[in-house]
Image (cartoon, rainbow, N blue to C red; front, side, top):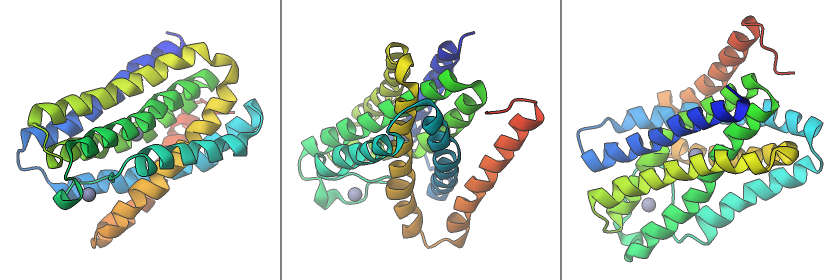
Length: 248
Ligand SMILES: [Zn+2]
Ligand SMILES: [Zn+2]
């Protein structure tokens, strides 16, 4: 299996995790909110470690103007999720008063769709550089997919959408990730730049979307789980190294 084929399989799994997150909202069973907060916290730690210790260094080797692309990636998410979009944040949507118009839900979906597209770009760029990098980036994406699907599902419900709309929205997010993977087939020549862009996206999602949600939680365990994410990253790298697979 080629790197891109493997990226497509794992990108599809990551996309399905969006759907599972949306299903948690649409199914409205008694889910444990704290459980999702832990995912979010571990995801944030893991993603920051991957971005700073792997994505940026790899991109410096493979591409030009790395830090410029990191900056562009970072502000692309700020623009799409928080500037063009009137109201979006991770976690459960509880601000019905901020969502008078259903358009708020759809704009949130579009903004988040740009980010999930880059989730796919990240996985594919990783596999285009090396398999271990691809697996680590897949882990970074997968760890925040459940809260991501959950966030968009609850945003749709809170802005007046039906459960079906909520589920459909999370499916579209997953699809954007798959499209992101596929699009990298045309950009294999600029994988270093794509990696830098996705690093900027990853840093935004982790530090500016996820960490603020972690900080809202009063739980000491959730705050500590961010360090659990760093530890998980270290374990993942060690396992890959023990298996004789070096990233460099
Ligand atoms: Zn809100
Ligand atoms: Zn994502």
